[in-house]
Image (cartoon, rainbow, N blue to C red; front, side, top):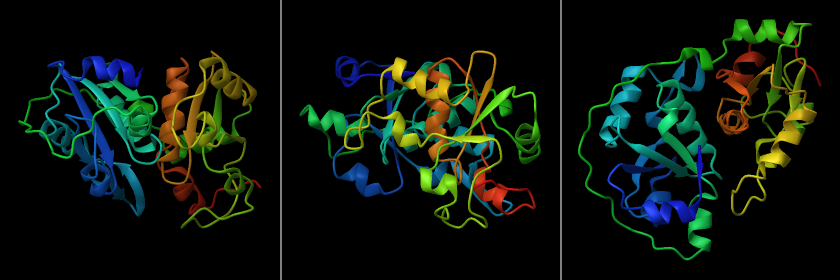
Length: 269
């Protein structure tokens, strides 16, 4: 699920390794990227559905995106991109949804660490042939509004709900952009997704022990699901990835607080 820059440098030219650079701005890619990287725009893998932004696109559309990027069922997929690994994590969740997560990994530290180590970069896009890809969707990794409502009300505590937004948005001191209410989903715990990183300049994960302690403190345990959310499912994709990396049964509420705040459901401050 996670590879180092050293590992990637040694496997850069392996025939089955496909490196995807996930971006919002093409300039991130064109200004220098890891050699062999293929660009995937965030807008290719998300859509607006029922007024909710950044929802997973349809399976057929997602499959075409990854086929155009040259992904086959033999590929070992390495992900990095903009926003300290957040977009790479969103791509990982997308691949997990398609049943391809067992062959995908995030590059720990991303392009930032690659550059800090003065490794070679490329300014040109590699030639890419369209491949054929078989996918098997796993909608169970996503949580609906109805399910989230039940989890929020449940006294059984069979799941821990983690809000990945900054603390001031979690507490309601600040409105998240474009949401209708301030605060958080009742009975959720705030763990800002960037607190899972060593620092913001080079986005490396904290040690597994440190991460496990953060999740334990939130109420996570081996017998519970970890359900993440944020504003529109972007920040929580990173928390989803980390929870899965630690061995928890990880799910994500894709509609997130954007959808919840537009419903009559209550919020906490």
